[in-house]
Every structure is written in C-alpha cells, then in structure tokens.
Image (cartoon, rainbow, N blue to C red; front, side, top):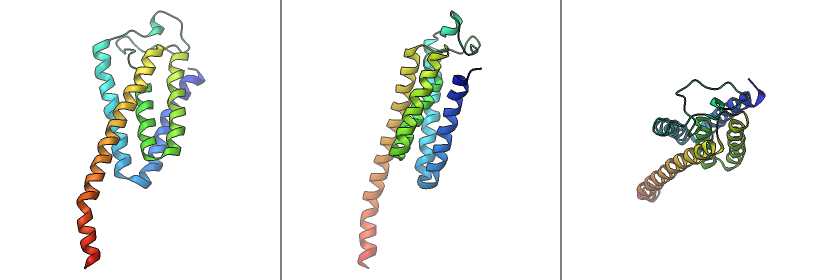
Length: 161
C-alpha cells in the first residue's frame, strides 16, 4: 500500500468531516446532500455491471493491490464519491467547495497514478458524481424556493396582525 492509496481513502475522510461541519449549519440540506453521494455511488455500481471494463492492473504492473476479478473499472467509485461530495459541498459552502474540488481531482488522479483505473474511468466518475449531486442540489433549491413562496403570505399576515 502506497501513500497515494492511503491518501485517496483519506480524502474520503476529509469529505466526511466537511459534511459533518456543514451539518451543524445546514442540517437537513447537508444530510440530503450526503444522501445524494450515496445515490451517485449506487448509480455507478449499476453502470459497472453494465459496462464490465477490466482494470489496467490486470494487464500491467500497479503500485496498489489490484481488486479481485469482478470489481470492474468503469466508472471509478472513488471518483464518483469524490465528484458527488465536492459538488454537494460546493452547493452548501463555496469555500469548502473549492477545497473539496481540489481534493476530488487529487483523489481521482491518484487512482490513475497507482494503476487501478484508466483516465476515462476517473473522468466519467467525477462527471457522474458531480451531475447527480448537482441535480439533487437543484431539486432541493427549487423545493426550498417553493416553500418560501408558500410561506410568504403567512409571514406577511403574521406581521400585519
């Protein structure tokens, strides 16, 4: 196990810490954003079963231990989680989001460097994760806007009384 492999997993811990910090400020939105990461992961597992691409470490040397046969390469689950987490965090807090984006790119890159994924695996993973998280963020924002509009007359009436 190399420092790159450990670093990739450590980045996932950084995302979990960021979600925890954001939970104190956003509660339900942070929880739902985290749930979006789980949804993105589930979608990537379905894609893996359909595409069934072998990993590069099956035919070439790699710095990391090659996962067992049947653990397909496309898309990279680490990259899906990283992309989804970065987008969800960015939707909740722009500064943390930029840090998360850099961490996501670093985590995805490390999967290629250690030899367990192709570049297109991690690019597709980042895109899939980010798109799923972005879609959930848009839905949550629309829901919040509808609730604010629905509450507006009640707030006005309370102030008039």
